[in-house]
Amino acid sequence: MVSNPVHGLPFLPGTSFKDSTKTAFHRSQTLSYRNGYAIVRRPTVGIGGDRLQFNQLSQAELDELASKAPVLTYGQPKQAPPADFIPAHVAFDKKVLKFDAYFQEDVPMSTEEQYRIRQVNIYYYLEDDSMSVIEPVVENSGILQGKLIKRQRLAKNDRGDHYHWKDLNRGINITIYGKTFRVVDCDQFTQVFLESQGIELNPPEKMALDPYTELRKQPLRKYVTPSDFDQLKQFLTFDKQVLRFYAIWDDTDSMYGECRTYIIHYYLMDDTVEIREVHERNDGRDPFPLLMNRQRVPKVLVENAKKFGITDLPRIDVSKREPPPVKQELPPYNGFGLVEDSAQNCFALIPKAPKKDVIKMLVNDNKVLRYLAVLESPIPEDKDRRFVFSYFLATDMISIFEPPVRNSGIIGGKYLGRTKVVKPYSTVDNPVYYGPSDFFIGAVIEVFGHRFIILDTDEYVLKYMESNAAQYSPEALASIQNHVRKREAPAPEAESKQTEKDPGVQELEALIDTIQKQLKDHSCKDNIREAFQIYDKEASGYVDRDMFFKICESLNVPVDDSLVKELIRMCSHGEGKINYYNFVRAFSN
Image (cartoon, rainbow, N blue to C red; front, side, top):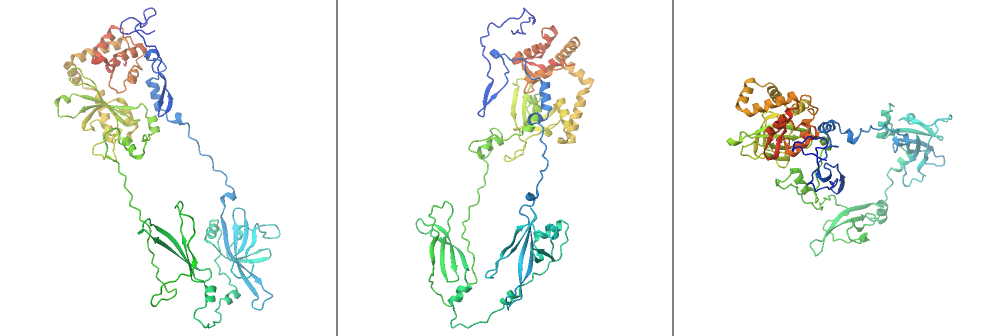
């Protein structure tokens, strides 16, 4: 049951009627798809396309949601959990203290030595306070060497106490299972650890040497052999000694030839040579290890050649040099869309949308800064044109609307849709966009070659600038504040001149004063302006005639009153639009 506010009948029971010409009774679609995902949206219109006047958020509710922090979406931040307890076997895992020591062993059944000095390494494992004693293996020593005492906790005395790292130091004797070890030194890690724990280390001592071993190091008697070269001597001297050379076989000059790498081994014990292939993963070749088996290789002797007389082995660089990397440059901007959107075509085969600052969009949702500007143009007709700049804080986009002026000869309306405006003299590779700090009274804004001068702002801009004073210069804040003071206290001479100049303005002001006196107690005066601003997305100050009456009907505005009808007539504009700026003044006092 819907009544038409134009026919003049009061909205009372029995005086409303159904629309007999209505033929559409379909329900609106509430399911849509975006990026391949199903999204459920709230219906905005009812059966037959009639706009729903309930279950819609008011401007006050939207402002309340916009002022709340993103905690509503993401919840309270989680507190960091307390530090976990780390046991010793984890904190000191693979941390070992190493000490160099020796012990003296008697040799009763020998005529060449009376005692023997055996050098050992004492390891202390911090994770479980265990110790082990290992003797380095000496080739052909004839003594069982290696691990003398396996890893365990070692007793310090008869009372059952065990050795601790605090008991170890340089220049001390420790007794383990009846053997006395003299600790002479420790490694760098052990020294740093003990000093960090407040232990003063003794100076290091020299490692004791075994007298019999030193005696064996003395040169033996030399025997003169009948020949300068002894094959047995060469075998004993150069056993297990191999020379390794890295070589390449460059066969690129032949058909299907390539450059391959090899390793040449030269065995000094018998002067044999083998050549091994170097295989790489997925090289497509059979894994044969040898190109040439170990054998003696003849060579052509040169004059005055000497065996092993080569002293200079220069290194040859055979690595293939990679070509210099190609610098990836973005193609020139084609002018369609934003620079960030066009650049995504160069980063991936399937372009992806640039990442957005979700937190900024949630915090600044529905926050718009509006400014009044004039076009700087040498054309006389453009001097009286006025433009409304809307700066959207959530997306840093700007829209421009030109309010239509009757009999001006210029079609008003949307001058520029929502887009980011690049500052002049900024490069295409690194564009700099206009921000809130660039808008103040007297500022010049250049939009795609057209220069605009900011003349006026609304009260929300002043509140935003005062709450975010760090973003603005002192001159910008002073320009807004001075302009607001002048606007709040106009000169009486200017008011009289303006009234004398435009009789229609005087008539409109008188009508607004009369309506304010009669409807001063009307209940809708607090939210009537917000209701119109919800549907005026471009902040142009105009709404469609049908939408105007629907809003008035939802707010119970007495549009049937004779004075209100006259006010609607004076606020009407061509093309079926009504200027609600002057209309709401009658209900805002």
